[in-house]
Image 1 (cartoon, rainbow, N blue to C red):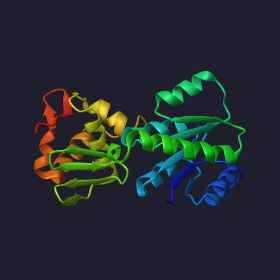
Image 2: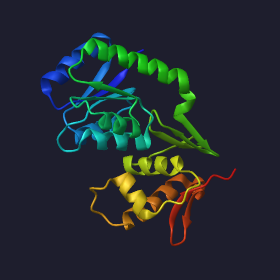
Image 3: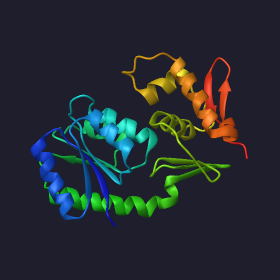
Image 4: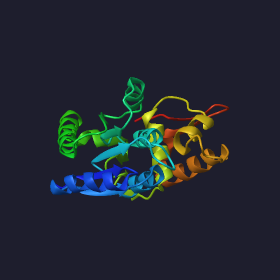
Length: 226
């Protein structure tokens, strides 16, 4: 089976060195040199694993890790030159699965990647990538959404919003909280952005859009009732 990895590393020589080792093991490698490029690539292809450097331009690795984890359970390995315990704790709190400190052997990194995937697939299986609510089905691995037999064409942000709502099923989420979590703290739009995307998302989901409920003067919540 060919595995797909997103390698995020701003050091070109290091990135090429790691890529060579993964390609020798028949992995397909997507290379990103900064955090913004990494997030764009993650939206474009289904990844089996993310190897993520922390100190990067544009958007740092902490932010990339958090944004990926908001919408995907893909295994994440963090690599960094920093050795502080607080950094490791932060990485795990953000949802990283492994933490590798530089300098390291690329062979060891590949071995740990293989072990992580084996452990991940053994614990959750393919079913862990599927979420179903009535006629609504979400495949987190392929980033696809179906209502019944019909494939629903969502924009990346609409998909991210849907996943965020389902992740917090039953909880009332304020517009501000949704905006900060889905669009990021560095986004300069206003709260109407959330309302607009909720409206579009409901329309695309048709009857299944009823699970996204408006809570007057509070925000929104995803509530499934069979």
